[in-house]
Image 1 (cartoon, rainbow, N blue to C red):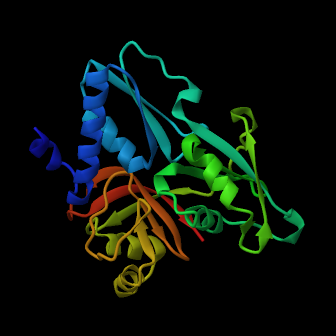
Image 2: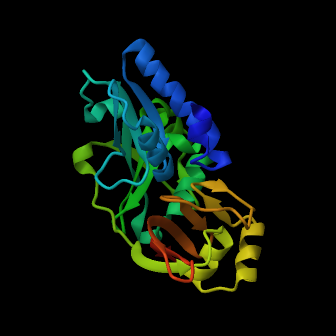
Length: 260
């Protein structure tokens, strides 16, 4: 059974498939809901694909606000009805001295990760241009925020807020269409940011690229639907549509791009 499933996904995704299969089995055996940590869009897609046509269990996704990128899943028996509070998400506003400068997504994430927690405990980090808010798994939130009183050179204070106080984040992603010869990561980066293929390879090999928040140095890595490619100092790319092939066998994609 799993061998048939594996063939549809990359080898590096097989451990996550095993994890999801275990979650399904736990829900079926215990007839009780299971709440995951934060999943990236690709992981959420794999979960959705694997749950497929199961009639006995369902799932829902929520990240703390509408259109969140990273979401927690609840996998549950058909009798259960998930509520917002069941996702175990705490929301914090980061209070900092606005008049002295600004924070950045990278600095906030780096500081959160320096506490030693895993990436999957942290959801989206959002801003409206001035205010910053972060979504953290409830079980880890007190530990994380008690460890941090500075981000960069700024003294900061984390204040827990309600769902009703979540800001509307600025969305700087742009939708673009792209035609490429292959889904190799060096090819995608080269095409999107208009740099040479050789330069793209250097960027990857110098550990400046992550796929779904995991560092990769493989220039031949094949990206797939909903993958998020982060390129330090250039921006981020997400594959949101695969639009088939051209007559010359090139791949047509719909992508979201964040340019720095």
